Each structure stands twice: as structure tokens, then as C-alpha cells.
Amino acid sequence: MRELDNLAVASLGVLLNEDTTLKRFYPLIPMKEVLMERLPSAGIEDKYDFGDWADQLPELAGMLQLDVEALQLFERFLHLHDFVNRRLKDVKSVSVPFRENLALGGVKTSGGYLLLCMNSTPGKLAGNYGAEEEEVRKLFSLCDLMRLPGVKDVRASLYYDCGYPGLEAFARQTGGEMQRKIARYIAENQVKKSVPFPKELNTQIAAAKVLPHLNPPGFAALR
View: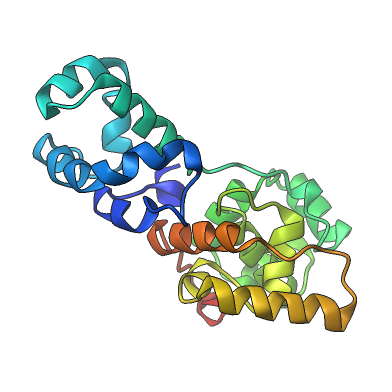
């Protein structure tokens, strides 16, 4: 889903750092400047452009004067940020009737809901699916947050409750301050959830900075 998980080659400087990616991708870190320079020279500006070469990596490696193994590792790195289409029935942070009404209307996944919101307004969706506008907006926020690597309903709802309603807000944060705020929220409200590790937050903040930011009508207040 290009509109939900595309990554620009120019964003590799944000993503490829020791505190923003998994250890198995560390060999790509010293190569990021080369990738950012040579990929566009071959007409590859984003993740989907690179995907068009998936069956021709040896040829691409020759064009770019890079090892095939390096491009294979880079391919796996890009897939780390692929959109995961979560089931709405697993999102326990919104009411069952709302989720059931969405399912009856054929909307059963986080991706389906995000695309639905892109073409409607909270008021219309509330009327069509028997929900309050606040709940319509909340589910959009949760689905938006679940675009981040490793984030499911439990983590998304924690971020939402701590005042981070979407990727744009998330992208403006620092890992240390977020961790302190989340820890404080969990302690004060006796929430049975864990505080994210610093690297987890830094990786997700980096992803939030470079993933497409969604701005559907009527949802601007969530940014």
C-alpha cells in the first residue's frame, strides 16, 4: 500500500542509524550515503521503485557497483517497514458495536479503515457506522499508529492515551522524553502495560518521520 508505507530513498539517513534500526541491518549504515546517491541515479527514488527490481537484483547490483548481498539486505530492511494490515476485531480500545458495524460494511482491517477515512469525514462515518465522532477519530489514530514497526493495539492505545494521536505528533518527539512521559502515565494510572525501551521508541520515531503522513478531512485536530 504505497500511500501507507512508502519510503523515500532520501530518508535513509533518518532510518539507518544504530539507535533506529535492528542490529542485523548495521552493515547498511556505512553504505547509506552511497545508496542515497546511486539509487536515484538508476531512477529509484522510493521503496516501490526498488521493488520493481526485486527479480533483477544482480543486474541492479552491476549498475550500481554494489554487491548483490548488500542489495538483498537492503531489500529485507525495506520490508521491515511494510504496512501490516491489522484486524479491527483485535482492536479492543474501541467499542464492539462500532467494530461490528464496520465489519458489516466490509471494513475489517486497519488499512481498510484508514482508506475509508481518507475519503470521508468523522461526522459522516459516525452517522454511517453508529459511533460517536470521538470514537471515529480515536480508531483512525490507533490505525495510524499501528503503521509503526511492531505496534499493535496495546502499544497504539498506550501511545494514544499518553497524548500521541498519530504519526505526525509522534515524529516531533524525542525518545527520552516520551519514555519518561509514558512511564509517568503508567505509574499514575496503574496501567498494566510496559514502558517501551529507548531503542524501540527511537526506531518508531524515525519511522514516523519518514512514513507518509495522512491528512484526511476532519482529522486535522489529531495531528
